[in-house]
Image (spheres, protein in one colour):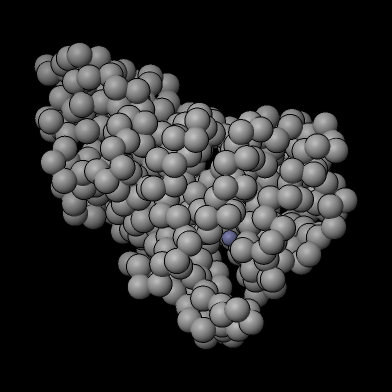
Length: 389
Ligand code: ZN
């Protein structure tokens, strides 16, 4: 059991100064004062006096196996390690493949996700890669979602990108329909995570699918919408129709493209445009490649996405863009949990999973991370490392 004493709790709503009791990996109680002395219980006390206590962060788009390869085999990025996630405050991660669905497979992604789960965090996966038709594990997207517990949706499917498989609207429609029915029959989100590239098409294909089918716009989660100002504007239109939009936090600080919208700034701009904060999420694109192409689509450089950026962009939104703490953290806690229908995740309340992050109030730094009731990071020091770290 863990008793977190005296923190300033954001559920993400502001709850004020509270104690939180965690037992069996779940939040047992949140109350003004919880005392357990003299009851013969084995309880570790975590002093959270004056620290902010937030739900564990959810990163809905991470290349757990690595990604990339756009410059040949030597540019394939490496697998992620447990501590890269936990030291970023991430206690729940959704893994995806990406450009390369040949040398990286769904079977390998599932094994990696299960390994991270054994090491202490919560993991889910999207089935497929950039490609349509989707190459999943079983005979269809629908089967993967219904039969395989960890698979909660499809993605990242690429549109408007020179690396996309250039699916037709009908091919995309069928994939999305399959994901939707799979989600309905399994009680999962069945969300389709769409990688939107820098092509002229932007979100047009998605808009057309929404306009010509009965599929609700909320079945889709387009990501990277802050990669250019034009795509960002298309994202605002998409959100005005009720759609979700996901902003990517990884960028190359040495190579911020001139019309790229920093995620922290993007959050501010979306709110100013009247978009409800509940429609917005951040994801890191961690461990994916950050390839730089010139106008001829030739590779001119490559970097690697970091999961650390997930919270640094939230922090920048609070410090530089004046977003309230409780609002800013929603985009990496409650919102992705609700959008993806991740049960028992994203909120601090009795009965939810014991996933928490303690953040220092002065510099807004991640201090302590608890995943399913286990302390992974305490006072900035790692207590748990992955098997080969
Ligand atoms: Zn992508």
